[in-house]
Length: 257
Image 1 (spheres, rainbow, N blue to C red):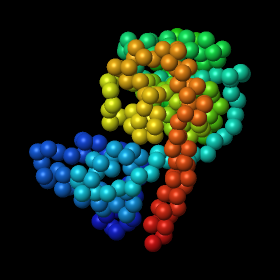
Image 2: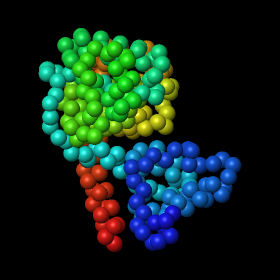
Image 3: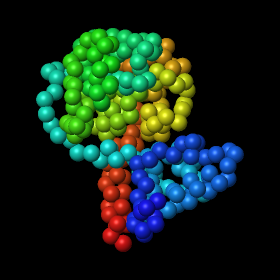
């Protein structure tokens, strides 16, 4: 609001617009939200579903994939041999019986394929929870301030499995690595970013919500990895880095104008 008052350029980008931005009972609420969003000189969302929601408010944002698709990578140490990456979000997997079910299938798949397991937490709470789960794997911890290195680690994996975290999906997909989203909380299609990213980019079969937990078997994982590797998917997300780079150039022009 201060930027608006003082005539400064406003950039809304990388956001996710959900139904929470709309009130069924208050036109005033919707008017304020719409006015706030329209004030931006550049407004983009990272999911196409957000465009549908924003348009209900009379706002028309651009679609720009998550900025992490354009993040550079920094090489560094990695596990010996071929490996998969597993990351677990703490708040949705603490004391959740579904977590163990998903993890067992992942570990059985890795064992059957002769793959190591790298555990890559994305924050301290994730790391603390992961240690309590007694997962047989190599803990690659305390990397929270090294996203370019983490992106490299995930890019060298044979597959990425994320239980609730969003950016492991982005890092895996941008490196053309088979990437699985495992939702231990929500059934079916949801407007959660971990679902939307895969569904909107042609990887819906790689998203396993609670009502697909019985389908998540080592055999199904192997089938999907083969499908991915054999060129059976269109992979539009491989063009996301170029889209992000173009958006950065567009924002620069807005700021210069």
